[in-house]
Image (cartoon, rainbow, N blue to C red; front, side, top):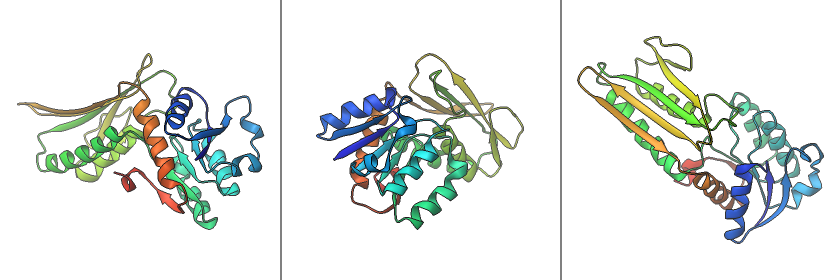
Length: 235
């Protein structure tokens, strides 16, 4: 496939390496220096675009891809409050959109475990649930999209939790401790504590390769397809 990379930071470079190793060609690299000069003609030359930019530029990039008819895989998070409008636009233009809060295969398996465990814990109010996430200092959105997905799963399955927060410790609130330090690729911990014991599950990424591989696999999946897809369509 011919791939356009919208966002050419550390993740973009990881994606490039994996894509090339899998036999694909990178025909467009968009970073800060040329972000405002992307033309529809350039995007149309790509079979798929992979978007890993910033929460401030992602929606504009998605719209550019939909306008040019280029399928787009979106790894950037922090834009989901605009999702309904983007979804409507995609459907109106018969476009192709693949989005995920996390493209790692391991994380998506972790999502399954998290939902299942939360459903079990719902029967046992003596367990208090909390979350912690650790990411590198360059990550712009707090909490991360992955943390929000995990939190929403907990809220869906545990009746006594109705919202999440990175600030409040109210009984009905799932507290997320949000840490930014060093070059940590991503660590997520969900902890259930009672007077007699703790139950804890954790996903710890060792590097960015798992995220990058998932994005390329998503691009291969969405090629020649129409519609809106997530990692659940692959797992």
